Image (tube, rainbow, N blue to C red; front, side, top):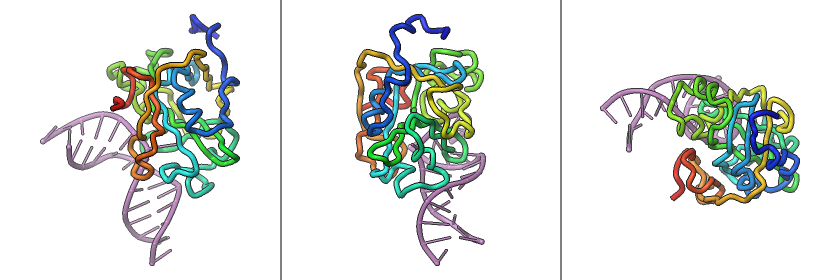
Length: 196
DNA sequence: CCTAGGATTAGCT
DNA sequence: GCTAATCCTAGGC
C-alpha cells in the first residue's frame, strides 16, 4: 500500500488478538495506524468497555443497538452519541461476551486535506481529539456497524514496538467512573484531554 | 406510551 | 464554565 515509508516495520491486523479482554486490547492499540478509505492516522487514545461494567452499552445484554458488540471480534461497533456524533469501537471478546474498545483520538497523518475539510479546518490538534471528532474526520457512518476491520474501507496496522502508555479513568460516563480503562500515548498532543 | 439521559462538541459568557 | 443541539435507546408505567 502507498503512503507508508515504514510499511515493512508494520504488521497487519492479524497480529492483534481481538479475542481477548477489552482492557488488554485497548492499550495494545495505542500507536496503531487506523485508516478508513485511506484517511486516518495513529491511535493515541482508547477506552475499554465490557459486559461486567455498567458504563458499557453491552451491560445488560444484547439489544438492537449494541448487537455488533456481541458479533465477531475484530469488527466495528458504530453508535450515535448524543444524537449528533458517530463513534467507532473495535469489537473484542472476553469469554464469549460482548466487549469493545472506543477509539477516542488519533494523530492525523493520512488524508490530511480531507480530514481538515470534514472538520471545518480547525487546528491540527483538534482534528481528531475526541470520539465524535474521529468519527467526523474519518466519515464514520452507521453502515459501517458490524463491518470487519481487516477489509475495505478499514485498515488497521499495529506498530511492533511498545510505546509509553498513560492510564486513567474513562471520560464522560456516570457509572463505573473509577475503572481505569482509558489508555493514551504518553505526552501526545492529540489526546482529547491530558492524563493527570 | 412517555420521558430521561446519554462512551460529545462547539460556541458563548 | 455553561449549555444547546439532536435523536433514539432503554426503562418505567
